[in-house]
Length: 494
Image (tube, rainbow, N blue to C red; front, side):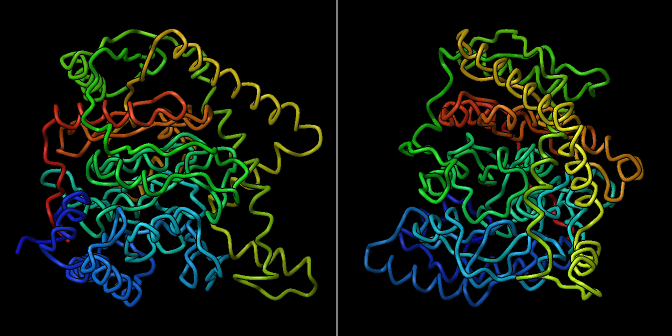
C-alpha cells in the first residue's frame, strides 16, 4: 500500500470515501510518522493519539454507512492557539501551564462537524508573537528543509511554524494556523507549503487565543492549493459568538481552483521593489507574472504609496492590542501562579516568570503607546495610517485590478539562533515586510511555493485579493503552482 501520509488531503478524502483504506489506517500512519519525527522537528507540543483513534473509528463507522462530512476521517494538526475542549491549549506559553479549556473554538468545531480527526496541538511562537518559531516555551520548531549539502537547522517561519513544518514533513494532512501580520504566509513560504489568510471576518475568532483582535485571522496551511481550498471551506462560516464574523455564505472554494486567470488584471506594486532585495526573489516575482500572463492575465503596474508606513504602524497597533488582550493572564483563575507576598506581587511574579522575552517586549511597547500623553502621538496616528493603507488597496481594486502579486518573504528560511536576527528584533520584524499590509487592510492573501533559492530552499509568491474574493486567489495560485511544476518535498533527514 502507498504510504498514506504522502497523499494530498484531497486524495486522502477521496480514498476514504472509496473505501481504499480506513480512517484508522491513515491516522495510525500519521501517529507513527509523528512519533518518529517529532523528537527532531518539535512540531507538536501535544499528541492526542487516543482521541485521534476514537475519532477515526467513528469516521469509519460513518463512511461504512455511506455517510460522512466533507473531511470525514482526514487527520489534521491544530495550532496551539485554538481552544480544544479538554486538550492542552497554551499558546506555547508558560503562563498558560496545564490549561485545558472547557469549550471548543468555533473553527475546530466546524472541522470536527465535517468529520476531521485531531492528531494533536502544534508548536508556535508564544502567543503568536514571532517570525521564526523561536519564542515558544517548548523550544523552536525545526524546518524539515535544509540547504543542499548543509546540515544546519533552519527556522520554519512563524508564528505558525509548527503547522507549516508538520504539513511539509507529512505529519498531518493539513493544519489550522493563524495570521496577524504574516504568520500563515511566511511559514508557508519557508516550508514549500500553501497558506491562505482569509479576509478578516471570514473565519470565527471565537475560542482562538487573542494576540491583536483587529488583525488576527484563522486559515489553513496545506500541501496544495486545492487542499487549502478544501480546508478553508470547512473552517469558514458565520459565528454569532464573534462580533467581527461576517454573515456571508461560504462558497465551495475548491470549485474555484481550476477557474484560471484569463481576463484578470494582476497588479504589481512598485513600492514592494525594496532596496537590497535578493536577485532570486526579484527573478521569481518576474517569473510569476510571466506565468499569469501566459494563462491570459494582464499585468499592470500599480502604486500603494503608504506601504512604507505599514511596518511601523503595524508594530504600534499589534502590541497595543496585545497589551490589552494579555492583561487577563494574571495567575488568578487558570494557568501558572507564582506565589507573592500580596496579590500585586503575585501578579508581578507570575507575569515575570510566565511570559517570554518577546511577549514582554511587545506588552511593554503596547502599554507605552497606549499610555497617557502618547496615545494620540502613536496609536491614533497608526490607526490613521492604517486607513490610508486600506484606501490604497481600495483605489487599486476600484481601478480594475483583480489581484496583486508580490513576493511572500524577503528571503528563504534562515538559521535557528541566527545571531543577526537574535541581536536585532527590528531585523526579525522586517520578515513581515510583504505581509503586514494585508492584515492592516483586512484583505485575503495566499502564499504559494513558486521556486527555490541557490541552496535549493523553497521560495513563495504572495497573491493579495479583494475582500471576500478568496476564490480568485485560489484560481491564480493554482496557475502559479502548476507553472512552477516543482516538487516541494523536503529530503528526509529526520
